Amino acid sequence: MAEKRQITIGGVPGAGKSTCGRKLAEFLGYKFYSVGDFRRDMAREKFNTDISTLNLLEDAKLFLKDYNIGEMADSELLPKVQALGLEGKDLWNLRKIVNIDTDVIADNMQKDLGIKGDHFIIEGRLAWKFCPGSFSVFFTCDPKVAAERILKDPRSSERQYSSVEDAEQANVKRMESDNNRYVQKYGKGYDCYNPKHFKFVIDTTNLTSEETLRRVIEAIDMYYGDYSNIELLYY
Image (cartoon, rainbow, N blue to C red):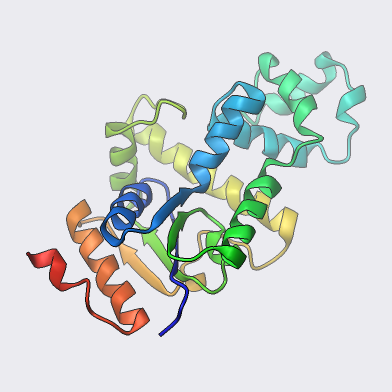
């Protein structure tokens, strides 16, 4: 039996990762960490913006990596980033983020946890990579169902969607953006939505949050070689 119990959660947006992760931590008595929450706080505290815009700023920084953003006039810079979804009010933050890599800050937090931490759950797209000894779980879901969940339970720190179709399209763009950014930054092997990187894959499309929690706990108990927690779910 492994001494350390590190559980990493990844997967597609709207699959129920955060909900399950928090319930799982409460059930097991583990600490819970969310890279998304960590970056949301960073977006608010360092840039006075939301996580969606912070991701766009990181995308724009890579898109303009061959330019000296600090020396470009607003009139020259804005047309280049409008296609990415940024506006004139975001240009100040774009110049600021050139000297701050928010991905690396979050990655270092995860690496530190992987080295020093014990009995924790962390939700993050690359948590499986930075905590290599963890039991890694990938959450997948039908794209439409995932979009419906996001529309039904929106986060105030993220973009608000007008329809299921809008949310579904945004999810596709978000996933493409994440993979492109990580592969450009770190190289091959960082495709964060590839289930092959994970030890356990669960499709939550037709599952309630309670059913999802039960199946994940069963998988964890099987992985670590004890079945002490399963019975508790049926009391």
